[in-house]
Length: 170
Image (cartoon, rainbow, N blue to C red; front, top):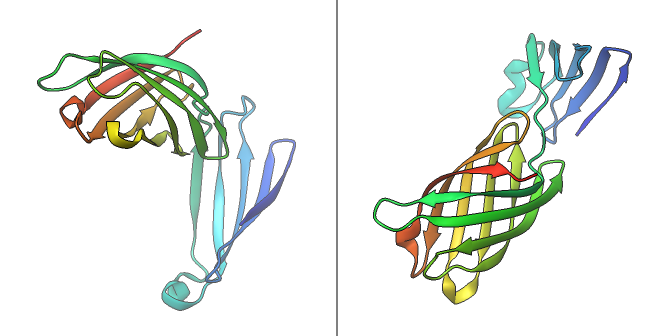
């Protein structure tokens, strides 16, 4: 569990893990609000992490926008015609959900998708029953304008697995 406060540009907080480890953090938020950095200290640790008790170090982070809204692009496989993919995503706090629509696919048409988003990495999964399922994993830029995805399709259309770049639609 992470708890803390922001006062002006000063950050203070605690990360309490379940094993239990407790880590205190302090830092500074940049004026733009897009980056932060600071120090940490492991206050207590048990079990396999007991030797970390007392450790200190530095941390830094960059705000990454959550990929929400409609995205469109082509997924290109090695030996099949490209498939047009439209994603309509919503989400927050690391969880994404939405709808994937496929044009020019031999099997896939439309399916609900769910997934996770951490830092700039995302993974989405969808299943349309007998028509097959898909796993999309990849990265986004810091403004979530572009998704670079690997597509792994199972079922009758597995040859449509490939790579693609999705661009946020206006």
